[in-house]
Length: 104
Image (tube, rainbow, N blue to C red; front, top):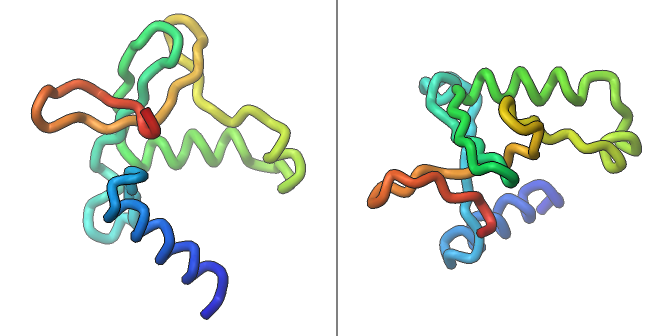
């Protein structure tokens, strides 16, 4: 079993146990590219909604041309349009409608 498969299994197990939240962005063949992704500013709390495809495009633009070493030492987070704070990926709670940051 290669490392990628082992990591995928570990992620799925952690998600099943409720320790982490797993979000699959998929390859777009089933319409996932148009599904919404929620980003919440860690400074002012503003919520920005965009499609998965849009998010992937913006992240690709941020990281294009960077080596692996540069990626480890570069802030590749999207910035809030209101306060320039860091936008973090979240999910919309189906019960409350609130956007909850992943890992909180």
